[in-house]
Length: 480
Image 1 (cartoon, one colour):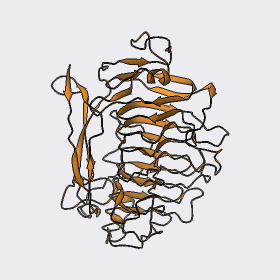
Image 2 (cartoon, helix red, strand yellow; image 1 turned 180 degrees about the vertical axis):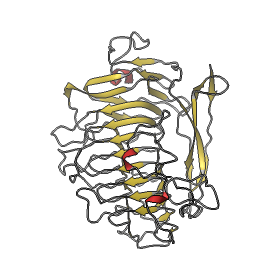
Image 3 (cartoon, one colour; image 1 turned 180 degrees about the horizontal axis):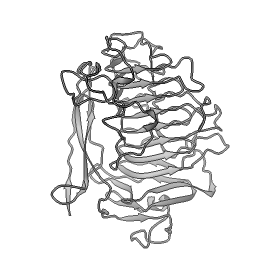
Image 4 (cartoon, one colour; image 1 turned 45 degrees about the vertical axis):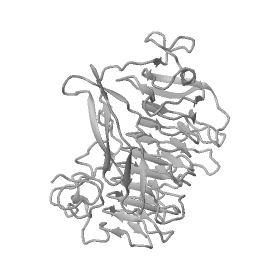
């Protein structure tokens, strides 16, 4: 066995459609990964695009990898009075772990259900850029966090009562954890699975699943965090003042620092009573790539009206300056949401949406009459909207008023969209299990361009890699 060390340098990246550049430092915190043998059979190597074609190379261990060296161990059968350092003497709670874990430490969580009697508070658990704090599921096992029957609700933290409260933490890397059944109780406060308070920066969350609770994940006024291959689904908040109107899959919201940046890759958001992903009142930059948002805005297990029901809600927030692009959506799919697929929502700076698909939004159950695939009708901002497809929605396109940067979409070039342009349009597959490395399934079938169809090479170069003479329209680039 050997260690492979990864060093990622800082880079200045030019954003398409922006008259400025952003300085972005590596925030992944993956200082080491395990490899085995000459073929590296335990590694999955991913190239993730970051704004304008720049990429980071991410190494994620696959299933079957050896158990890494660990400093601390947790188990549902553990005991916080033990030393937490061996397989036979694990801790039980994150509250205990938070008192001892330090920069450079790795904590492994054994599989099974952890029934917590109280909120788990993760405060002042800081790593560094070279020595992250790692909290990982034990290889091949699934730790599941929930509340016990004798759970004591905590005092609200900024109008929220999360199961796991990140109070002040930087350079953490959490992976392979599930939070289930943390249902909202009748007190009106948000019951998110995970809540990041202001100043939780430079963290990575990979393969985190939060479902069937009072809310998914809430990221409050924090920056330089990365979310990879996570699922947030079936969360609802019936006891909020405006019932069902706050349980998003994930909200990255209320950022006051225009220099904050957050990245979201390969995530899914579905069946949440409000929105899939929401950037409410966020003045910072958010980059979203290869994500799916579907069936949001309904009361769980019904087609009855819940909250707003927008797949990707881009606002509000911004600097008020059109030259500042603060959202970039790339290669995403928004399907069957109660209202809009991609919604502007009073954003005051520019958003860019490239190579994405809105399909069958505002058409199911109590769909909103104002819903559209792309809904950008509330301002005259010159949003960058290119290489997209809007098909089968209540209204495929609503705005924007300023069409300066809107081009090479299916609605403004001579291309006919029908079911046959894709290899598969089976929307029942959207919530199927992920691949063993955590990536989304059906990469070359579900909404993948069929051979010879007019969406192939029909787009315009926006600075990201493509095959053929020009990019394809929609979220997946064919190799024909």
